[in-house]
Length: 456
Image (cartoon, rainbow, N blue to C red):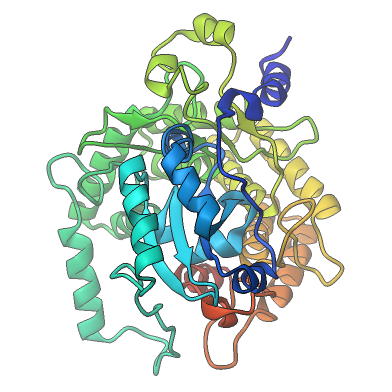
Protein backbone atom coordinates (compact mmCIF):
# COMPACT_ATOMS: atom_id res chain seq x y z
CA UNK A 1 0.00 0.00 0.00
CA UNK A 2 1.40 3.43 -0.93
CA UNK A 3 2.21 5.95 1.80
CA UNK A 4 -0.51 8.26 0.50
CA UNK A 5 -3.20 5.58 0.61
CA UNK A 6 -1.99 4.39 4.00
CA UNK A 7 -2.29 7.95 5.27
CA UNK A 8 -5.83 8.28 3.93
CA UNK A 9 -6.98 4.98 5.45
CA UNK A 10 -5.44 5.61 8.84
CA UNK A 11 -6.77 9.16 8.87
CA UNK A 12 -10.27 7.70 8.86
CA UNK A 13 -9.44 5.04 11.43
CA UNK A 14 -7.76 7.62 13.66
CA UNK A 15 -10.85 9.82 13.97
CA UNK A 16 -12.39 10.68 17.32
CA UNK A 17 -12.24 7.30 19.17
CA UNK A 18 -8.53 7.73 19.98
CA UNK A 19 -9.33 10.99 21.73
CA UNK A 20 -12.67 10.00 23.28
CA UNK A 21 -13.12 11.05 26.92
CA UNK A 22 -15.87 12.02 29.31
CA UNK A 23 -16.73 15.59 28.46
CA UNK A 24 -19.46 18.23 28.78
CA UNK A 25 -22.48 18.27 26.48
CA UNK A 26 -20.91 20.41 23.77
CA UNK A 27 -22.96 22.42 21.29
CA UNK A 28 -21.83 23.89 18.00
CA UNK A 29 -21.81 27.59 17.24
CA UNK A 30 -25.18 28.89 16.05
CA UNK A 31 -26.78 32.22 15.22
CA UNK A 32 -29.36 31.88 18.01
CA UNK A 33 -26.79 30.92 20.65
CA UNK A 34 -27.14 34.07 22.75
CA UNK A 35 -30.93 34.11 22.49
CA UNK A 36 -30.85 30.64 24.02
CA UNK A 37 -28.34 31.77 26.67
CA UNK A 38 -30.60 34.69 27.59
CA UNK A 39 -33.68 32.49 27.86
CA UNK A 40 -31.88 29.90 29.97
CA UNK A 41 -29.91 32.53 31.95
CA UNK A 42 -26.59 30.89 31.20
CA UNK A 43 -23.11 32.05 30.29
CA UNK A 44 -21.56 30.82 27.06
CA UNK A 45 -18.10 29.26 27.18
CA UNK A 46 -16.43 28.84 23.81
CA UNK A 47 -13.67 26.27 23.39
CA UNK A 48 -11.86 27.11 20.14
CA UNK A 49 -9.71 24.10 19.38
CA UNK A 50 -7.85 22.50 16.50
CA UNK A 51 -7.69 18.90 15.32
CA UNK A 52 -3.89 19.00 15.44
CA UNK A 53 -3.53 20.78 18.82
CA UNK A 54 -1.61 18.92 21.55
CA UNK A 55 -2.78 21.12 24.43
CA UNK A 56 -6.38 20.91 23.22
CA UNK A 57 -6.17 17.14 23.66
CA UNK A 58 -4.56 17.50 27.10
CA UNK A 59 -7.31 19.90 28.17
CA UNK A 60 -9.97 17.48 26.94
CA UNK A 61 -8.38 14.61 28.87
CA UNK A 62 -7.84 16.54 32.11
CA UNK A 63 -9.82 19.77 32.48
CA UNK A 64 -13.05 18.94 30.70
CA UNK A 65 -13.07 15.42 32.15
CA UNK A 66 -12.90 16.85 35.68
CA UNK A 67 -16.20 16.14 37.53
CA UNK A 68 -16.27 19.51 39.30
CA UNK A 69 -15.69 21.39 36.02
CA UNK A 70 -18.48 19.38 34.41
CA UNK A 71 -20.79 20.13 37.36
CA UNK A 72 -20.18 23.88 37.10
CA UNK A 73 -20.65 23.89 33.34
CA UNK A 74 -23.91 21.94 33.61
CA UNK A 75 -25.23 24.35 36.25
CA UNK A 76 -24.69 27.73 34.60
CA UNK A 77 -23.03 27.47 31.18
CA UNK A 78 -23.66 26.60 27.57
CA UNK A 79 -20.45 24.83 26.48
CA UNK A 80 -19.65 25.41 22.78
CA UNK A 81 -16.80 23.70 20.96
CA UNK A 82 -15.62 24.90 17.55
CA UNK A 83 -12.92 23.66 15.18
CA UNK A 84 -11.04 26.87 14.45
CA UNK A 85 -9.77 25.65 11.06
CA UNK A 86 -13.36 25.17 9.90
CA UNK A 87 -14.51 28.58 11.17
CA UNK A 88 -12.22 31.34 9.88
CA UNK A 89 -14.35 34.17 11.26
CA UNK A 90 -14.16 32.93 14.85
CA UNK A 91 -10.52 31.84 14.54
CA UNK A 92 -9.55 35.24 13.09
CA UNK A 93 -11.40 37.12 15.80
CA UNK A 94 -9.83 35.09 18.61
CA UNK A 95 -6.55 33.93 17.08
CA UNK A 96 -4.48 35.87 19.60
CA UNK A 97 -5.90 33.67 22.38
CA UNK A 98 -5.23 30.20 21.09
CA UNK A 99 -5.01 27.35 20.65
CA UNK A 100 -6.93 26.29 22.65
CA UNK A 101 -8.69 29.61 23.14
CA UNK A 102 -11.29 29.85 25.90
CA UNK A 103 -13.75 32.74 25.65
CA UNK A 104 -16.54 33.28 28.18
CA UNK A 105 -19.54 35.43 27.24
CA UNK A 106 -22.43 36.90 29.16
CA UNK A 107 -25.88 35.93 27.86
CA UNK A 108 -26.01 39.22 25.91
CA UNK A 109 -22.88 38.29 23.90
CA UNK A 110 -20.48 40.60 25.71
CA UNK A 111 -17.08 39.16 26.61
CA UNK A 112 -16.23 38.33 30.23
CA UNK A 113 -12.88 36.54 29.86
CA UNK A 114 -10.45 35.52 27.10
CA UNK A 115 -7.79 32.98 28.05
CA UNK A 116 -4.93 31.67 25.96
CA UNK A 117 -3.78 28.05 25.98
CA UNK A 118 -4.13 25.23 28.46
CA UNK A 119 -6.19 25.77 31.62
CA UNK A 120 -5.63 23.33 34.49
CA UNK A 121 -8.73 21.77 36.13
CA UNK A 122 -8.32 23.70 39.40
CA UNK A 123 -7.87 26.99 37.56
CA UNK A 124 -10.91 26.28 35.40
CA UNK A 125 -12.98 25.53 38.49
CA UNK A 126 -11.93 28.86 40.00
CA UNK A 127 -12.69 30.72 36.77
CA UNK A 128 -16.16 29.22 36.40
CA UNK A 129 -17.02 29.90 40.05
CA UNK A 130 -15.71 33.47 39.90
CA UNK A 131 -17.79 34.32 36.84
CA UNK A 132 -20.94 32.91 38.45
CA UNK A 133 -20.25 35.06 41.52
CA UNK A 134 -19.25 38.20 39.61
CA UNK A 135 -19.76 38.30 35.83
CA UNK A 136 -17.93 41.61 35.36
CA UNK A 137 -15.51 41.62 32.40
CA UNK A 138 -11.98 40.72 33.46
CA UNK A 139 -8.66 42.35 32.50
CA UNK A 140 -8.33 40.10 29.43
CA UNK A 141 -11.24 41.92 27.80
CA UNK A 142 -10.34 45.20 26.14
CA UNK A 143 -11.36 47.30 23.21
CA UNK A 144 -10.80 45.71 19.82
CA UNK A 145 -8.20 47.31 17.59
CA UNK A 146 -9.94 49.88 15.41
CA UNK A 147 -8.82 50.11 11.79
CA UNK A 148 -8.85 53.71 10.63
CA UNK A 149 -8.22 54.92 7.10
CA UNK A 150 -4.71 56.27 6.69
CA UNK A 151 -4.17 59.88 5.69
CA UNK A 152 -1.47 58.78 3.25
CA UNK A 153 -0.61 55.68 1.26
CA UNK A 154 3.00 55.96 2.52
CA UNK A 155 4.66 55.51 5.89
CA UNK A 156 6.04 58.67 7.45
CA UNK A 157 9.66 58.80 8.60
CA UNK A 158 8.71 58.48 12.26
CA UNK A 159 6.42 55.49 11.57
CA UNK A 160 9.08 53.77 9.49
CA UNK A 161 11.74 54.38 12.16
CA UNK A 162 9.51 52.97 14.91
CA UNK A 163 8.60 49.88 12.90
CA UNK A 164 12.24 49.28 11.99
CA UNK A 165 13.26 49.60 15.63
CA UNK A 166 10.66 47.02 16.70
CA UNK A 167 11.76 44.67 13.91
CA UNK A 168 15.44 45.00 14.85
CA UNK A 169 14.88 44.60 18.59
CA UNK A 170 12.75 41.48 18.21
CA UNK A 171 15.51 39.59 16.39
CA UNK A 172 17.32 36.95 18.45
CA UNK A 173 21.00 37.65 17.76
CA UNK A 174 22.10 34.45 19.51
CA UNK A 175 19.82 31.77 18.04
CA UNK A 176 18.24 33.49 15.06
CA UNK A 177 14.57 34.09 14.46
CA UNK A 178 12.24 36.78 15.69
CA UNK A 179 10.97 36.26 19.24
CA UNK A 180 12.50 34.41 22.15
CA UNK A 181 10.47 31.64 23.81
CA UNK A 182 8.80 29.89 20.89
CA UNK A 183 11.15 29.41 17.97
CA UNK A 184 9.77 29.28 14.43
CA UNK A 185 10.13 31.35 11.27
CA UNK A 186 7.97 34.43 11.54
CA UNK A 187 6.83 34.70 7.93
CA UNK A 188 6.61 38.47 7.57
CA UNK A 189 9.89 39.12 9.39
CA UNK A 190 11.80 36.70 7.18
CA UNK A 191 10.16 38.08 4.05
CA UNK A 192 11.35 41.55 5.02
CA UNK A 193 14.85 40.30 5.78
CA UNK A 194 15.08 38.47 2.44
CA UNK A 195 13.86 41.51 0.52
CA UNK A 196 16.48 43.66 2.26
CA UNK A 197 19.13 41.04 1.54
CA UNK A 198 18.22 41.13 -2.15
CA UNK A 199 18.86 44.89 -2.02
CA UNK A 200 22.37 44.29 -0.64
CA UNK A 201 21.79 44.65 3.12
CA UNK A 202 24.54 42.53 4.73
CA UNK A 203 22.95 42.54 8.21
CA UNK A 204 19.63 41.35 6.78
CA UNK A 205 21.44 38.58 4.91
CA UNK A 206 23.05 37.39 8.14
CA UNK A 207 19.74 37.44 10.00
CA UNK A 208 17.83 35.64 7.28
CA UNK A 209 20.41 32.91 6.81
CA UNK A 210 20.95 32.34 10.53
CA UNK A 211 17.19 31.89 10.94
CA UNK A 212 16.87 29.59 7.93
CA UNK A 213 19.83 27.48 9.09
CA UNK A 214 18.42 27.13 12.60
CA UNK A 215 14.86 26.32 11.50
CA UNK A 216 16.00 23.24 9.56
CA UNK A 217 15.88 21.54 12.97
CA UNK A 218 12.06 21.77 12.80
CA UNK A 219 11.89 19.54 9.70
CA UNK A 220 10.99 15.90 10.39
CA UNK A 221 14.06 13.92 9.20
CA UNK A 222 12.01 10.78 8.54
CA UNK A 223 8.88 11.87 6.67
CA UNK A 224 9.72 15.47 5.92
CA UNK A 225 7.37 18.31 6.70
CA UNK A 226 7.91 20.99 9.30
CA UNK A 227 6.72 20.97 12.89
CA UNK A 228 4.84 24.05 14.08
CA UNK A 229 7.36 25.48 16.55
CA UNK A 230 9.95 24.71 19.22
CA UNK A 231 9.57 25.80 22.82
CA UNK A 232 11.83 26.69 25.76
CA UNK A 233 13.82 29.24 23.75
CA UNK A 234 15.40 26.50 21.66
CA UNK A 235 15.11 25.14 18.14
CA UNK A 236 15.40 21.56 19.44
CA UNK A 237 12.20 21.12 21.51
CA UNK A 238 9.48 20.96 18.85
CA UNK A 239 5.74 20.69 19.16
CA UNK A 240 4.97 18.05 16.58
CA UNK A 241 1.81 19.20 14.79
CA UNK A 242 2.24 19.61 11.04
CA UNK A 243 -0.06 22.33 9.75
CA UNK A 244 -0.47 23.17 6.08
CA UNK A 245 0.08 26.90 6.60
CA UNK A 246 3.58 26.18 7.92
CA UNK A 247 4.31 23.65 5.16
CA UNK A 248 3.36 26.23 2.52
CA UNK A 249 5.30 29.04 4.19
CA UNK A 250 8.52 27.09 4.73
CA UNK A 251 8.35 25.59 1.26
CA UNK A 252 8.07 29.07 -0.25
CA UNK A 253 10.76 30.66 1.90
CA UNK A 254 13.37 27.89 1.59
CA UNK A 255 12.75 27.90 -2.17
CA UNK A 256 13.25 31.67 -2.28
CA UNK A 257 16.38 31.33 -0.13
CA UNK A 258 17.83 28.78 -2.54
CA UNK A 259 17.04 31.07 -5.49
CA UNK A 260 18.80 33.92 -3.68
CA UNK A 261 21.93 32.21 -2.33
CA UNK A 262 22.12 28.87 -4.20
CA UNK A 263 22.93 27.06 -0.97
CA UNK A 264 22.06 23.37 -1.51
CA UNK A 265 20.88 22.91 2.07
CA UNK A 266 18.00 25.30 1.39
CA UNK A 267 16.89 23.31 -1.65
CA UNK A 268 17.16 20.12 0.41
CA UNK A 269 14.99 21.67 3.11
CA UNK A 270 12.42 22.74 0.52
CA UNK A 271 12.39 19.22 -0.94
CA UNK A 272 11.79 17.70 2.49
CA UNK A 273 8.78 19.92 3.01
CA UNK A 274 7.50 19.32 -0.53
CA UNK A 275 7.66 15.54 -0.21
CA UNK A 276 5.60 15.60 2.98
CA UNK A 277 3.08 17.99 1.48
CA UNK A 278 2.64 15.93 -1.69
CA UNK A 279 2.86 12.45 -0.12
CA UNK A 280 0.94 12.84 3.14
CA UNK A 281 -1.35 15.89 2.91
CA UNK A 282 -2.33 15.43 -0.75
CA UNK A 283 -5.78 13.87 -1.15
CA UNK A 284 -6.62 11.41 -3.94
CA UNK A 285 -8.73 14.19 -5.50
CA UNK A 286 -5.66 16.38 -5.93
CA UNK A 287 -6.46 18.93 -3.22
CA UNK A 288 -4.68 19.26 0.12
CA UNK A 289 -5.71 18.23 3.61
CA UNK A 290 -5.39 20.62 6.55
CA UNK A 291 -3.04 19.14 9.13
CA UNK A 292 -1.61 16.15 10.95
CA UNK A 293 -1.93 15.77 14.70
CA UNK A 294 0.95 16.36 17.11
CA UNK A 295 0.26 13.08 18.94
CA UNK A 296 -0.84 9.57 18.04
CA UNK A 297 -3.36 9.46 20.92
CA UNK A 298 -3.66 10.28 24.62
CA UNK A 299 -1.10 7.61 25.48
CA UNK A 300 1.52 8.13 22.77
CA UNK A 301 2.51 11.76 22.42
CA UNK A 302 4.62 13.38 19.72
CA UNK A 303 7.83 13.24 21.74
CA UNK A 304 7.62 9.46 21.84
CA UNK A 305 6.17 8.92 18.38
CA UNK A 306 8.38 11.19 16.26
CA UNK A 307 11.55 9.86 17.88
CA UNK A 308 10.83 6.54 16.13
CA UNK A 309 12.09 5.45 12.68
CA UNK A 310 9.73 4.96 9.76
CA UNK A 311 8.81 1.30 10.31
CA UNK A 312 8.15 1.73 14.02
CA UNK A 313 5.89 4.70 13.38
CA UNK A 314 3.86 2.84 10.78
CA UNK A 315 3.49 -0.15 13.09
CA UNK A 316 1.82 2.08 15.68
CA UNK A 317 -0.32 3.90 13.10
CA UNK A 318 -0.47 7.50 11.91
CA UNK A 319 -1.42 10.57 13.90
CA UNK A 320 -4.82 11.78 12.80
CA UNK A 321 -5.02 13.78 9.58
CA UNK A 322 -7.70 16.46 9.21
CA UNK A 323 -9.08 15.49 5.82
CA UNK A 324 -11.14 18.62 5.22
CA UNK A 325 -10.39 20.42 1.95
CA UNK A 326 -10.46 24.19 2.36
CA UNK A 327 -9.97 26.78 -0.38
CA UNK A 328 -7.73 29.02 1.72
CA UNK A 329 -5.37 26.24 2.75
CA UNK A 330 -5.15 24.99 -0.82
CA UNK A 331 -4.29 28.49 -1.98
CA UNK A 332 -1.41 28.57 0.46
CA UNK A 333 -0.17 25.15 -0.67
CA UNK A 334 -0.38 26.08 -4.36
CA UNK A 335 1.67 29.26 -3.80
CA UNK A 336 4.29 27.25 -1.91
CA UNK A 337 4.55 24.65 -4.66
CA UNK A 338 4.86 27.31 -7.35
CA UNK A 339 7.72 28.94 -5.43
CA UNK A 340 9.37 25.52 -5.21
CA UNK A 341 8.91 25.01 -8.95
CA UNK A 342 10.41 28.44 -9.66
CA UNK A 343 13.53 27.50 -7.69
CA UNK A 344 13.88 23.83 -8.61
CA UNK A 345 12.29 23.61 -12.08
CA UNK A 346 10.62 20.39 -10.90
CA UNK A 347 7.69 19.89 -13.32
CA UNK A 348 5.97 17.48 -10.93
CA UNK A 349 5.51 20.24 -8.35
CA UNK A 350 3.93 22.56 -10.91
CA UNK A 351 1.62 19.81 -12.16
CA UNK A 352 0.43 19.09 -8.61
CA UNK A 353 -0.16 22.80 -8.01
CA UNK A 354 -2.19 23.15 -11.20
CA UNK A 355 -4.26 20.07 -10.41
CA UNK A 356 -5.06 21.44 -6.94
CA UNK A 357 -6.09 24.80 -8.40
CA UNK A 358 -8.39 23.11 -10.90
CA UNK A 359 -9.98 21.10 -8.08
CA UNK A 360 -10.66 24.25 -6.04
CA UNK A 361 -12.09 26.05 -9.07
CA UNK A 362 -14.38 23.08 -9.73
CA UNK A 363 -15.42 22.43 -6.12
CA UNK A 364 -15.11 25.61 -4.06
CA UNK A 365 -15.85 28.45 -6.53
CA UNK A 366 -18.94 30.58 -5.89
CA UNK A 367 -21.23 31.83 -8.66
CA UNK A 368 -20.09 35.41 -8.01
CA UNK A 369 -16.41 34.60 -8.61
CA UNK A 370 -15.14 34.14 -5.06
CA UNK A 371 -14.53 30.96 -3.08
CA UNK A 372 -16.24 29.31 -0.18
CA UNK A 373 -14.13 27.75 2.58
CA UNK A 374 -15.24 24.11 2.81
CA UNK A 375 -17.89 21.83 1.48
CA UNK A 376 -20.48 23.21 3.93
CA UNK A 377 -19.70 26.46 5.72
CA UNK A 378 -21.48 27.70 8.83
CA UNK A 379 -20.99 31.35 7.78
CA UNK A 380 -19.08 33.26 5.18
CA UNK A 381 -18.04 33.63 2.50
CA UNK A 382 -14.74 34.45 4.18
CA UNK A 383 -12.25 36.94 2.83
CA UNK A 384 -9.23 34.71 3.38
CA UNK A 385 -10.32 31.97 0.99
CA UNK A 386 -10.61 34.27 -2.01
CA UNK A 387 -7.44 36.23 -1.17
CA UNK A 388 -5.37 33.04 -0.80
CA UNK A 389 -6.75 31.48 -3.96
CA UNK A 390 -6.42 34.76 -5.87
CA UNK A 391 -2.75 34.95 -4.92
CA UNK A 392 -2.24 31.30 -5.89
CA UNK A 393 -3.80 31.94 -9.29
CA UNK A 394 -1.53 34.94 -9.81
CA UNK A 395 1.47 32.79 -8.88
CA UNK A 396 0.43 30.13 -11.40
CA UNK A 397 0.09 32.80 -14.09
CA UNK A 398 3.56 34.16 -13.34
CA UNK A 399 5.03 30.64 -13.51
CA UNK A 400 3.26 29.45 -16.66
CA UNK A 401 2.16 32.49 -18.66
CA UNK A 402 -1.27 30.88 -18.99
CA UNK A 403 -3.73 33.78 -19.09
CA UNK A 404 -6.60 31.58 -17.89
CA UNK A 405 -4.97 31.70 -14.45
CA UNK A 406 -4.74 35.49 -14.70
CA UNK A 407 -8.41 35.77 -15.67
CA UNK A 408 -9.43 33.67 -12.66
CA UNK A 409 -7.24 35.79 -10.40
CA UNK A 410 -8.89 38.97 -11.70
CA UNK A 411 -12.32 37.52 -10.89
CA UNK A 412 -11.10 36.77 -7.38
CA UNK A 413 -9.93 40.37 -7.09
CA UNK A 414 -13.36 41.63 -8.08
CA UNK A 415 -14.93 39.48 -5.35
CA UNK A 416 -12.42 40.62 -2.72
CA UNK A 417 -13.47 44.21 -3.45
CA UNK A 418 -17.01 43.39 -2.31
CA UNK A 419 -15.72 42.88 1.26
CA UNK A 420 -14.72 46.53 1.47
CA UNK A 421 -16.11 48.69 4.26
CA UNK A 422 -16.65 52.25 3.10
CA UNK A 423 -15.40 53.53 6.46
CA UNK A 424 -12.06 51.78 5.87
CA UNK A 425 -10.67 48.30 5.58
CA UNK A 426 -12.12 44.96 4.54
CA UNK A 427 -14.45 42.71 6.50
CA UNK A 428 -13.30 39.18 7.38
CA UNK A 429 -16.66 37.63 6.49
CA UNK A 430 -19.73 38.49 4.47
CA UNK A 431 -21.87 37.38 7.41
CA UNK A 432 -21.48 38.03 11.12
CA UNK A 433 -20.95 35.25 13.63
CA UNK A 434 -24.02 36.56 15.46
CA UNK A 435 -26.03 39.66 16.22
CA UNK A 436 -25.51 40.06 19.98
CA UNK A 437 -22.72 41.71 21.95
CA UNK A 438 -19.31 41.84 20.31
CA UNK A 439 -20.67 40.07 17.22
CA UNK A 440 -22.96 42.94 16.33
CA UNK A 441 -19.88 44.62 14.85
CA UNK A 442 -18.30 42.70 11.92
CA UNK A 443 -14.66 41.81 12.37
CA UNK A 444 -11.87 43.54 10.44
CA UNK A 445 -8.50 41.97 11.19
CA UNK A 446 -5.20 43.69 10.54
CA UNK A 447 -3.68 40.58 8.91
CA UNK A 448 -6.57 40.52 6.45
CA UNK A 449 -5.89 44.12 5.49
CA UNK A 450 -2.24 43.30 4.83
CA UNK A 451 -3.04 40.29 2.65
CA UNK A 452 -5.64 42.21 0.66
CA UNK A 453 -3.17 45.06 0.03
CA UNK A 454 -0.49 42.61 -1.15
CA UNK A 455 -2.86 40.72 -3.43
CA UNK A 456 -4.46 43.80 -4.93
